[in-house]
Image (cartoon, rainbow, N blue to C red):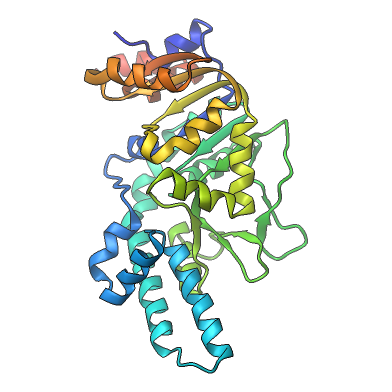
Amino acid sequence: MIASYQELYENGKIDTEHLLIGNGFSIGIWKDFNYTSLYERQEDSLEIRDKMLFEELKTTNFELVLENIKKAININQIFNYEINELSKSYERIKNALIQAVIKVHPANYETRLHTDIELNNTFSIFKKSIFTTNYDLIPYWLHIKLLKQKKEINDFFKKNGKEYLNFAPVRNDNSLNLYYLHGGLHLFVNEENLIQKVKKEEHQFLIDAVTESMSNNNIPLYVSEGKWEDKLEQIESNKYLRFCFDALKRSQGHLTIFGHELSEAADKHIIEAIQNSKIDVIAYGIYDLDRKEAISERIKSYFKDKDVLFFNSRSFHDSIENLINPWFGDKEQMRG
């Protein structure tokens, strides 16, 4: 038997200070969500030379490859070398990225997702920080939902005298702080070398604003799936990602982890950040209940000097709703 998150909270074992979410969180909101590598989705559409660039750079990250092509184009122009093939490759790879993003977030995604987003109150119950390693748009939508509810949430993007939202690393101790540890599809580094946030503005859907931004050569700032060493290298090379990662390392108190495998191969940088933080209590959600003993032993081995608790991920959403609205459980029983 494994406790529900509600039981841990009501028994005073976990406080809702910090939350770390992974891909399981997005799948939990929309069951059809298929969060695989963007590169894997479009690899077959790329020409051999395009794929060779990814192989040469030892990456599946479109941003890194496109940035290197840009540099190559600039260098060739200085020496008056032909850039036609490089430009064509840039356009092919950029368009492959756009198509991959559209596949992750179909055109009718926001319409289909709207009800589930409106029903999800996960962000509402946490007080200090939301850390996400997802680069999809679901945390963005939940952020907007809180703003509509007049609740303070800070994603560290302000206008700062510009015409657009850009990274402003000013913390507000009175707000819930949202950190995209691996970047997001709605973030990019602009021509002024500032990290800019895409806004929906005149578009009906946010995904349309994102794809239009990409078509204008604003390549999303995101850390793709892969080895943890590669992810950490990308994080350390960008001031926004570094800021978010440092915030995780500086965290203290209670941390809830939901929808995150925390594998050593892919997530060791996240594990070490938590190990080195002042987090003293961790509540980790287990989805595969048939393997709960093996999973709990693995997670406890990471955090030997911390109090590690476990809860049933499958009932996490209901636990949140019950804590926010005590009548929720009665309604669910009546439906049953």
